[in-house]
Length: 245
Image (cartoon, rainbow, N blue to C red; front, side):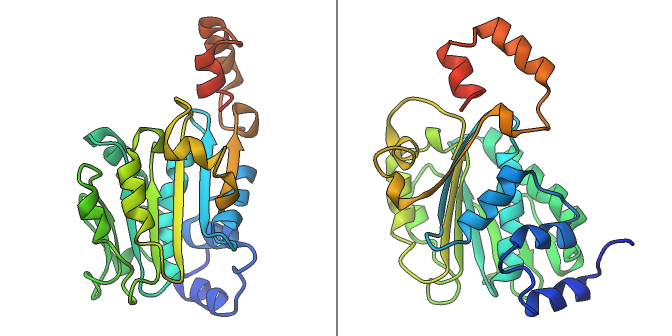
Protein backbone atom coordinates (compact mmCIF):
# COMPACT_ATOMS: atom_id res chain seq x y z
CA UNK A 1 0.00 0.00 0.00
CA UNK A 2 3.00 2.35 0.42
CA UNK A 3 3.66 4.99 3.04
CA UNK A 4 1.32 7.79 3.97
CA UNK A 5 2.12 11.25 2.69
CA UNK A 6 2.85 14.19 4.96
CA UNK A 7 -0.60 15.58 4.18
CA UNK A 8 -2.27 12.30 5.18
CA UNK A 9 -0.36 12.20 8.48
CA UNK A 10 -1.38 15.80 9.21
CA UNK A 11 -5.02 14.98 8.43
CA UNK A 12 -5.00 12.00 10.77
CA UNK A 13 -3.32 14.12 13.45
CA UNK A 14 -5.99 16.81 13.17
CA UNK A 15 -8.70 14.14 13.32
CA UNK A 16 -7.26 12.95 16.66
CA UNK A 17 -6.40 9.50 15.31
CA UNK A 18 -3.14 9.35 17.24
CA UNK A 19 -4.27 10.65 20.64
CA UNK A 20 -4.94 7.23 22.16
CA UNK A 21 -2.31 5.42 20.11
CA UNK A 22 0.74 7.67 19.49
CA UNK A 23 2.67 4.65 18.25
CA UNK A 24 0.57 4.78 15.07
CA UNK A 25 1.99 8.23 14.33
CA UNK A 26 5.47 6.71 14.61
CA UNK A 27 4.53 4.07 12.05
CA UNK A 28 2.86 6.51 9.65
CA UNK A 29 5.25 9.46 9.92
CA UNK A 30 8.57 7.70 10.58
CA UNK A 31 8.00 4.24 9.11
CA UNK A 32 9.04 2.59 12.38
CA UNK A 33 7.25 -0.27 14.12
CA UNK A 34 7.77 -0.22 17.87
CA UNK A 35 8.33 -3.11 20.25
CA UNK A 36 5.59 -3.69 22.87
CA UNK A 37 7.59 -2.00 25.66
CA UNK A 38 8.17 1.02 23.44
CA UNK A 39 4.45 1.32 22.77
CA UNK A 40 3.79 1.24 26.52
CA UNK A 41 6.50 3.87 27.02
CA UNK A 42 4.92 6.27 24.52
CA UNK A 43 1.50 5.95 26.10
CA UNK A 44 2.94 6.44 29.58
CA UNK A 45 5.02 9.51 28.74
CA UNK A 46 2.09 11.27 27.13
CA UNK A 47 -0.29 10.20 29.88
CA UNK A 48 -1.32 12.20 32.96
CA UNK A 49 2.04 12.32 34.78
CA UNK A 50 4.11 13.56 31.81
CA UNK A 51 7.17 11.86 33.35
CA UNK A 52 8.68 8.52 32.35
CA UNK A 53 11.74 6.73 33.70
CA UNK A 54 12.98 3.63 31.87
CA UNK A 55 15.55 1.22 33.26
CA UNK A 56 16.61 -1.18 30.55
CA UNK A 57 19.08 -3.75 29.36
CA UNK A 58 21.78 -2.96 26.81
CA UNK A 59 20.35 -2.93 23.29
CA UNK A 60 16.72 -2.43 24.26
CA UNK A 61 16.23 0.63 22.07
CA UNK A 62 15.96 3.25 24.80
CA UNK A 63 18.20 5.71 22.92
CA UNK A 64 16.14 5.13 19.79
CA UNK A 65 13.11 6.10 21.86
CA UNK A 66 14.81 9.38 22.75
CA UNK A 67 15.05 10.14 19.03
CA UNK A 68 11.48 9.00 18.35
CA UNK A 69 10.14 11.14 21.20
CA UNK A 70 12.08 14.09 19.77
CA UNK A 71 10.39 13.84 16.38
CA UNK A 72 6.97 13.01 17.78
CA UNK A 73 7.01 15.97 20.12
CA UNK A 74 8.14 18.47 17.49
CA UNK A 75 5.26 17.56 15.19
CA UNK A 76 2.48 17.09 17.73
CA UNK A 77 3.10 20.20 19.87
CA UNK A 78 3.29 23.46 17.91
CA UNK A 79 5.67 25.19 18.43
CA UNK A 80 7.80 23.15 20.79
CA UNK A 81 11.28 22.62 22.14
CA UNK A 82 13.07 19.37 22.90
CA UNK A 83 16.19 19.53 25.07
CA UNK A 84 18.43 16.48 25.29
CA UNK A 85 21.30 15.94 27.68
CA UNK A 86 23.36 13.20 29.27
CA UNK A 87 26.65 12.58 31.07
CA UNK A 88 29.48 14.93 30.16
CA UNK A 89 31.52 13.82 27.18
CA UNK A 90 30.81 13.39 23.49
CA UNK A 91 29.93 9.68 23.36
CA UNK A 92 26.35 9.93 24.61
CA UNK A 93 25.65 13.00 22.52
CA UNK A 94 27.01 11.30 19.41
CA UNK A 95 24.89 8.20 19.96
CA UNK A 96 21.66 10.11 20.57
CA UNK A 97 22.20 12.56 17.75
CA UNK A 98 23.01 9.74 15.32
CA UNK A 99 19.58 8.25 16.04
CA UNK A 100 17.88 11.64 15.66
CA UNK A 101 19.60 12.03 12.29
CA UNK A 102 18.59 8.58 11.03
CA UNK A 103 14.96 9.17 11.93
CA UNK A 104 15.03 12.62 10.32
CA UNK A 105 16.07 10.88 7.10
CA UNK A 106 12.97 8.66 7.30
CA UNK A 107 10.43 11.28 8.38
CA UNK A 108 7.65 12.52 6.10
CA UNK A 109 8.49 15.93 7.58
CA UNK A 110 12.16 15.80 6.56
CA UNK A 111 11.93 18.67 4.07
CA UNK A 112 10.32 20.89 6.71
CA UNK A 113 13.33 20.57 9.02
CA UNK A 114 16.97 21.52 8.83
CA UNK A 115 19.70 19.36 10.33
CA UNK A 116 22.74 20.58 12.25
CA UNK A 117 25.39 18.75 14.27
CA UNK A 118 23.64 19.27 17.62
CA UNK A 119 20.40 20.96 16.58
CA UNK A 120 17.30 20.10 14.55
CA UNK A 121 15.01 23.01 13.63
CA UNK A 122 11.72 23.57 11.86
CA UNK A 123 12.42 25.82 8.90
CA UNK A 124 11.23 29.37 9.38
CA UNK A 125 10.95 28.90 13.16
CA UNK A 126 14.59 28.21 14.04
CA UNK A 127 14.53 29.92 17.44
CA UNK A 128 11.14 28.80 18.72
CA UNK A 129 10.63 25.31 17.27
CA UNK A 130 13.61 23.00 17.60
CA UNK A 131 15.48 20.20 19.30
CA UNK A 132 18.97 20.66 20.68
CA UNK A 133 21.68 19.01 22.74
CA UNK A 134 22.43 20.80 26.03
CA UNK A 135 25.62 20.17 27.96
CA UNK A 136 25.13 18.89 31.49
CA UNK A 137 28.37 20.47 32.70
CA UNK A 138 26.66 23.63 33.96
CA UNK A 139 23.20 23.29 35.57
CA UNK A 140 22.76 27.07 35.33
CA UNK A 141 22.65 26.75 31.55
CA UNK A 142 19.86 24.21 31.87
CA UNK A 143 17.84 26.50 34.12
CA UNK A 144 17.40 28.89 31.20
CA UNK A 145 15.70 26.34 28.95
CA UNK A 146 11.94 26.84 28.79
CA UNK A 147 9.18 26.00 26.36
CA UNK A 148 8.49 28.45 23.50
CA UNK A 149 4.92 29.27 24.57
CA UNK A 150 5.53 31.09 27.87
CA UNK A 151 7.20 27.94 29.19
CA UNK A 152 4.81 25.43 27.62
CA UNK A 153 5.50 22.66 25.07
CA UNK A 154 8.83 21.51 26.46
CA UNK A 155 10.27 17.98 26.45
CA UNK A 156 13.42 17.19 28.43
CA UNK A 157 15.28 13.96 27.65
CA UNK A 158 18.09 12.66 29.87
CA UNK A 159 20.18 9.84 28.39
CA UNK A 160 22.18 7.44 30.59
CA UNK A 161 20.54 9.14 33.52
CA UNK A 162 22.41 7.11 36.16
CA UNK A 163 25.53 9.15 35.28
CA UNK A 164 23.91 12.59 35.50
CA UNK A 165 24.34 14.63 38.68
CA UNK A 166 21.37 15.53 40.87
CA UNK A 167 22.06 19.23 40.28
CA UNK A 168 21.14 18.76 36.62
CA UNK A 169 17.84 17.10 37.52
CA UNK A 170 17.08 19.91 39.97
CA UNK A 171 17.70 22.49 37.24
CA UNK A 172 15.43 20.65 34.80
CA UNK A 173 12.72 20.32 37.43
CA UNK A 174 12.55 24.10 37.68
CA UNK A 175 11.59 24.33 34.01
CA UNK A 176 8.73 21.84 34.31
CA UNK A 177 6.21 24.14 35.95
CA UNK A 178 4.04 24.88 32.88
CA UNK A 179 1.47 22.95 30.86
CA UNK A 180 2.58 20.43 28.26
CA UNK A 181 6.01 19.93 29.80
CA UNK A 182 7.30 16.36 29.64
CA UNK A 183 10.31 14.46 30.93
CA UNK A 184 11.87 11.22 29.68
CA UNK A 185 14.87 9.69 31.44
CA UNK A 186 16.45 6.32 30.72
CA UNK A 187 19.51 4.29 31.61
CA UNK A 188 21.00 0.93 32.33
CA UNK A 189 21.15 0.28 36.06
CA UNK A 190 23.97 1.42 38.30
CA UNK A 191 24.64 2.36 41.91
CA UNK A 192 21.65 2.66 44.29
CA UNK A 193 21.95 6.45 44.56
CA UNK A 194 20.79 9.53 42.71
CA UNK A 195 17.67 10.76 40.96
CA UNK A 196 17.44 7.94 38.44
CA UNK A 197 17.58 5.29 41.16
CA UNK A 198 14.99 7.15 43.23
CA UNK A 199 12.62 7.37 40.24
CA UNK A 200 12.27 3.58 40.46
CA UNK A 201 12.25 3.36 44.27
CA UNK A 202 11.45 6.04 46.85
CA UNK A 203 10.09 8.55 44.32
CA UNK A 204 8.39 6.07 42.03
CA UNK A 205 4.96 7.55 42.79
CA UNK A 206 6.04 10.70 40.94
CA UNK A 207 6.92 8.87 37.74
CA UNK A 208 5.58 6.46 35.21
CA UNK A 209 8.19 3.71 35.00
CA UNK A 210 9.15 0.93 32.64
CA UNK A 211 11.42 -2.03 33.41
CA UNK A 212 12.92 -3.62 30.30
CA UNK A 213 15.01 -6.78 30.63
CA UNK A 214 16.37 -8.74 27.69
CA UNK A 215 13.21 -10.88 27.88
CA UNK A 216 11.21 -7.85 26.68
CA UNK A 217 13.47 -7.26 23.67
CA UNK A 218 13.06 -9.51 20.65
CA UNK A 219 15.90 -7.61 18.93
CA UNK A 220 18.48 -8.88 21.45
CA UNK A 221 20.34 -12.03 20.46
CA UNK A 222 19.68 -14.85 22.91
CA UNK A 223 23.02 -16.32 21.90
CA UNK A 224 24.74 -13.14 23.05
CA UNK A 225 22.82 -13.25 26.33
CA UNK A 226 24.18 -16.75 26.93
CA UNK A 227 27.70 -15.49 26.24
CA UNK A 228 27.25 -12.72 28.81
CA UNK A 229 25.78 -15.20 31.30
CA UNK A 230 28.80 -17.47 30.91
CA UNK A 231 31.20 -14.54 31.02
CA UNK A 232 29.77 -12.78 34.06
CA UNK A 233 27.51 -15.38 35.73
CA UNK A 234 23.73 -15.08 35.85
CA UNK A 235 23.80 -14.22 39.55
CA UNK A 236 26.48 -11.56 39.17
CA UNK A 237 25.74 -7.90 39.83
CA UNK A 238 26.82 -6.91 36.32
CA UNK A 239 24.47 -9.41 34.61
CA UNK A 240 21.58 -8.35 36.82
CA UNK A 241 22.21 -4.66 36.15
CA UNK A 242 23.06 -4.68 32.44
CA UNK A 243 20.96 -7.56 31.15
CA UNK A 244 18.09 -8.00 33.60
CA UNK A 245 17.91 -4.24 34.38
